Length: 640
Image (cartoon, rainbow, N blue to C red):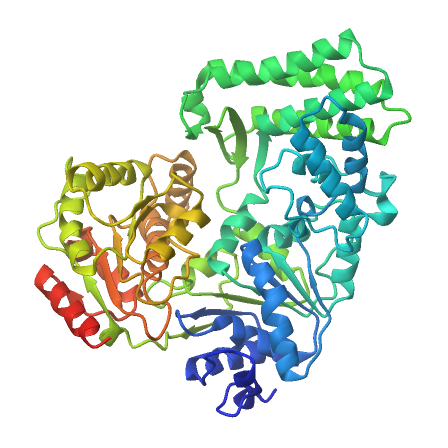
């Protein structure tokens, strides 16, 4: 690979990529990726903001001529790689490549379920559903991929989508009468034949664990797997080992059985009573739980929930027996029977699970619950999945290391011997940015902490004239901050608050306003790329330590303690550092950007571990007074 040429001054990329210019950091990452692919050596590479890591791994992938899987966290990045980046780069390099994009099955039209929906809708059905079905049928007649993103006429939140797509629960696999024309099967086959395949983490893990029964595996035959946004991969991988029973999926099963029984002409009082009994048992179990969204340990749920959960299992047994007697001649009923058996087995596994099996806990919210058993440490199992594939693993993200140490990330994926590289950001942080630590802040557990924090932020907003992200570690603090800014301080800038509109709309409104103040929690800490001078302040309320009240976290920390580790040092601190790096990373996204990261938590200066956070952030000069904030912006924007 002549990477120096492609990332050099005479690169053909300059003709097709606006703003392309040689970056030593980008070349260094590309060389590391190319060497890893060429030698078959696993690699973890942290690339600072501005490195251009997507380009740095795609060029070696296109040049290597091998079969490569690229995994991302989000569907948005999948689409960007497939529709924009790879075609553009392949054309610039004169290196055509067969590229396939593979999504989860719920992203593809299911022809069998479309036919079922057509049969169930009548002239008395809502007009919007009839209209949307007409659009779907016209599209279904000519689509090649079956990717539901192609349909603009049907809203993303339409109730029809779950009825015309499949999931692991309701897919009939090779028993489906439409199997020969299945869009999921076709997409899988294209992926098997492609040189480069774009997937997401959940699909990659499903393939690793063979959760997608009845379909060929993707990874055998792959030479390398590049995991982008890799800081999310350990959590996604761990979720594959979770055992859970969800009341919403149970309700979907009941609807499916009711529909199939009616279609077959076997619906009667016996199955009607049984289906009602299942739903009633599920609702009875929910009624025993606290009426709030969140996680609850099994012990805190109490014996009343445990009793109701066992009664739910009894009703599933009755339902299983009825389906067993009516499965002949119907692949759909047989699939419903399979799902019922699986849910019954899951409920029994949860009921008998002990402390050695994992943590039993319940998530409540939106009128339903999920009962879970979660293993506390699956690094060995994850390592077995990864190393069991005869391919090279390359992990990359802007946030993998804690103070330059990759041990936390590599330990979670069970690959501690993996080679590592840190590629620094090319941005001139000492010149274009500052870290403001406001003076006289109380401890974060002070009763008036949010009031004091907002009092410190408002004068800075007046300096920046809005143009700010305020990031919070809890919804409670966010709501109180929004109330203070709106009613007590009456700030003159557009106030955009998480929860008042969809995330994408809030971001669009922020960009359009040019002087907005956006308040957000977890999902706003990453994945937002706003360039230019419309965002010049990122203010963070507290160091983002996970809530100690979460039962899953508490059990994980106890497991670390029991194994001789230090829960704070080995888990809580590194997780918080990586989260802070993501939040602070929203500020500087391009060479022309400038601004201030404001962290209100005094522990950054007063605690012994504060230095770990500071050492993990870009080299931002620290300022400690409002006057220094004013001076910085006067100097930067006086010449901007």
